Image (cartoon, rainbow, N blue to C red; front, side, top):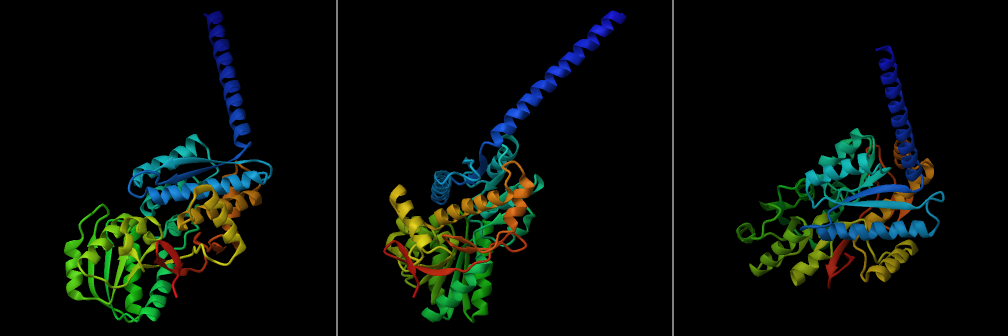
Length: 383
């Protein structure tokens, strides 16, 4: 019995030794691999109704990645991006973030595309003490989710006041109809800001109508708006619903000027709506016609690669990875998530293609917006 016990113990010790050795070897391999590149994740809407937003973001990220790597990477190591398709769904976004953190062991995450996704996935990343940065999330409260949640997309509450003030000064409208999707955190948040700013600027709201993401028939709401006869239509919606709404509004004889929220900042709006979107007004930190060498260089390289002018979503994605690169240089360690988060939070006056960045205490960007107008399918400065 004693001999058998010794043999069992010896076998157990040997098994533990082999297991530890294997674990050490595995960890060593993982550490070596992790330290050979700066590995980031990106959770984007790459399929479904909002794919135009996410695919522009992917293009911006890929151009930024290749630009960084062509210049020697960050501290001599290349940048890698692992892309995940959320399909615009909260659950998919959460699952993607968990995979990137636990399986892929990324240093930090860019995305998700939509604000509702960030409200679901942001707390997950925050609890895991992994930086996550929205590049198109504009709803109120994103930065306040937690210390590891950032965004380089200017919140609607920072854009809409200027959009309303400038458009009212130039168009002279006194009454407005507000139409918005009320089952989307982003469009609801923007609508609340629109309503507040319209009233603050002395504009009477003669109609407020709601609909849902995915709706295709807006004639009931628009008929009520037609009866109210406002001076301007204010719309908070994603590009697909906005395009259909504008087409139906014009068909019913509503030819008033249109002011939109951040969902209007995709060229898909004009592609889908055509002339119905002509003259639409929207605020954005991105203006491809800005007389700035950094902007024009980015536009030229993007056009050469993709055959079209970059939209706001591509530009903010490009800046997002460049901000990550700056934080990586400052932190100096591709596996230290805490050092990376702290370095990102300390960035001030960073010059990106969409403007000069600084983060406030909640991880929100502090920067200016430009008021744009759709003319012939292009965004031009509203004058």
